[in-house]
Image (cartoon, rainbow, N blue to C red; front, side, top):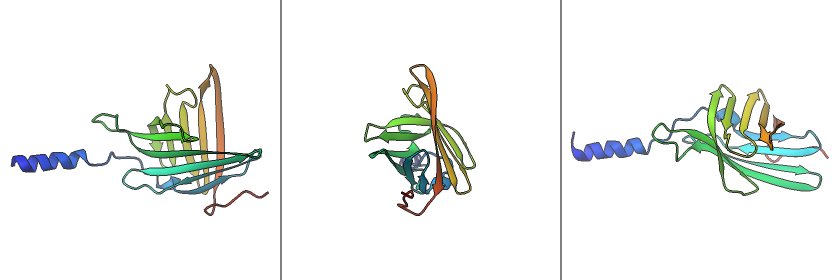
Length: 158
């Protein structure tokens, strides 16, 4: 094998995307109208291991947002790695490493983060459950959303 062929093969291997779990089940527009709030999440279909999402929450006359993506970790080393990168209210990204995945279930963790430590998504039919959990000031807490599949930009009844 020539040096040029070896270099070309090495470059191709380095540019190969990190394998990621099948997250096609996450794609779509999801709406939760419980607890006096309107929360929506929108997730793209996976493209070369990248899934992009955003969330909007309206409650008590106030609104908030979060941008996120799921994809390869750049600092994961040669073994690779996939993470959920959360950007609440436009803050710098906080990575949560993939620790578990299965059919229509995925779990990410970052024990060094203040709160949450874990992010979980699970789908059953047209219902998507999202849960965050961890300890904040030594107190264990969690929050959960139960989203229903909806038409893009659907709103909760007023």
